[in-house]
Image (tube, rainbow, N blue to C red; front, side, top):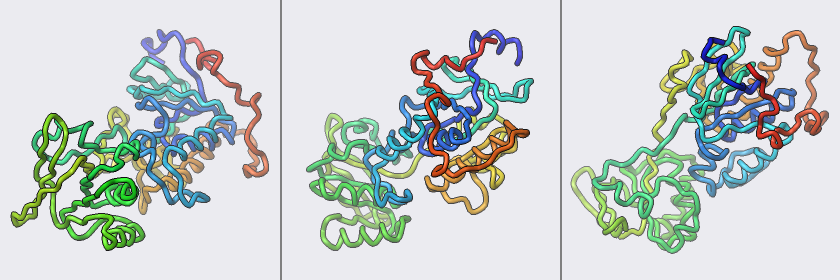
Length: 363
C-alpha cells in the first residue's frame, strides 16, 4: 500500500469483497461461505436487494427453480436468510470509489464513506450499475413525479381503484399491467407499435386480458402530453405517427422504458468493457484483472442470458475459482450442500457485537 493508505487507522481484511448486494451478490455470499470464504459486501443503496427491493418488491418472479412464483421482496428475504450463517459484513449506502492491487497481491477497496477493505479477491455483482429510469420526453413531467407519475411499483395497494396508463412494450410494462389489473379501476396499455417485446406466455395473457376487457390496448400510440393541476394528473395525451390523438382520463402514469445504466467508478478500473458491461472468461467469470470477477447482469460473454438464475450459476463458478486462487496449495474435496450443510456459528462468528470490526486489522 502507498503512504496514504497506510494512514488509514483500520482496514477490514477479508477473503472476498462483493460489490453489489442484489440477488446475485447475496447468493455469492452463500457460495463463498460454503467454501469457508468470508465476505464483505458493498452497495450504493441503503438496503440489500438491488433492483428487486428498490424497484419492484411486490412483482412476482416466475423463473426461480422450485418457486413457481415468488415476490421479489420474498426472494431477497430468503437469500438474506440463506447468507446469514456466514456472517457477511454489509457496507450499505456507499459506493466503491477506489480499487487497486496491493503489494501483497491482494485488492485494496475504498468506499465513498471512507471504509477500507483489504480483500483477497473481488466479485463485481453490480447489476446494471447505478440505475435510474429512462424518462419519456414530456413537458413538465417532473411536476407529476411522485404523486401521479411513477417509474417503479413498490406497493401495489397504492394503485387500488385508480385509472392507470401504463406505457411501454417490454416485460416490465406487460407484467405490471397483468399484476395490477385486478386492483385498478381501469388500465390503458400504451405502446407505439402493435408488436411487444415480451415472453410468449406474457403476450398470451395480455391478449386474453384485452379480449375480456380487463386491459384497454392503446396501440399504435405514444405519449405526447400530460394535463393536470398541482401535480395531480387528469389526462394523458397520446398520439400516432400520422397525427391522430386520444385523451386518456387517468389518475396515474406508469412509464416503463427501461433503466439508464451508469457504471460509475467501475468504468475507470481498467476492466475489459463492452457496451457498459464487463467482459469475463468462462467458466470462471474472471475479468482481465487477476482476482477480480464479474457476475450477474454486469458481466457479458457470448450467448449471455440476463436471468437471475444465470447469475446464480456464475456466483458458484466464481466462488470455486476464488477458493483455488486464494488457497492454491490446499487440498480441497468438494462436497454437496446436502452432505456438509451450512457452517456452525463457530466457523463464521458474528461481527454484530463489535460493530463489524471483528475482522479489522491495524495498518
